[in-house]
Length: 240
Length: 240
Image (tube, rainbow over all chains, first blue to last red; front, side, top):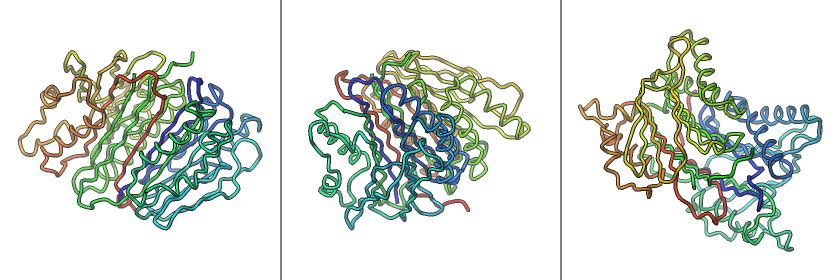
């Protein structure tokens, strides 16, 4: 099996930088984790917040802490230091080679989607963002690693794309209609979803948009085990 | 301008996992940093070591610490806790949007290459790995951000590829001969270098191999500012 993870992000229109932060790190016991945080609001304040939260989460994950403990600790940190005044959504998506499983840890009212050869399902169990109330916990779901499985998570800017124009992204229908029987690459899927959301906002995103796609694909078992990482960043004007 | 960073990695032949670790994180002040660590030896011991060192470096960088301070602190940590008995090479490659510069912070006897429209140059100023002696410092070089610039760094497995067969990778000649006048993508360049090194080792890498390519490319300034991240990981048998 080959694991692919792809992220595509764009900031709110005319905002110098996205307030969402997504980080990907290797887990010390093998596998990797993706942390996606949408900080309340947009612009510099949201960016500082999402950077603080991901920094904390990434440091703990790199130390080997389990996802549920990380989500709880990061919530306690934000709730304690900002006195319940600031919220953020937090998704931790982990591929655990030891458990041969994918873990989705979610502090996000938004659902995530699972695309498999059996069709599209989604998890929309009620889940609260971090930072607002004492003792917030993540909702954690486990998926066995198997070929042709896709997990799709995103931030609010994707889910509410087009709302200004009375449009609904209706991601479930969009994803169900994709010709994606295990042949789609993670990057293509992430790009298609982002492009669709931007189109609904007439090319001027009304909020920061991020989408993460994790794909489990077949591979030739005798091919060399090469790991690859690629990022592309447009040059941004810096904050001062 | 568009920044691209690509990593390609493969483990030593018949070793279950690479002892090199490469992480990429977003800097809180904008831009990003890549941390590449080659832990002494190979197999699980090397992997644990490189994970420890990158975990420390990533946590400090995400907190906003400057690269030179991070390299010093990570050295002190390793030297202190392992009593000067264990070494690792450390490269931190940062794109700093505020300074409009690339910083290469190097604790690695190996050079790195710079490919620009003017040709190929390399930095081989003497630089010691971390962990062995008191007060080790990084060698830091700064490059202005400009189009069609490539930085290429790698670990020992690339530099010494083919040595078992009396071959020399001669990367300088290999890179100078590439038809790469600002049109090469970072991923293609990283792949070409890794493939070349693997070929010299007859397809059975004699050591963990990692290569990082950072590319500064032109972009259409009116295109939407989309950031992308993509990883692919072959499924590995876990350590127990």
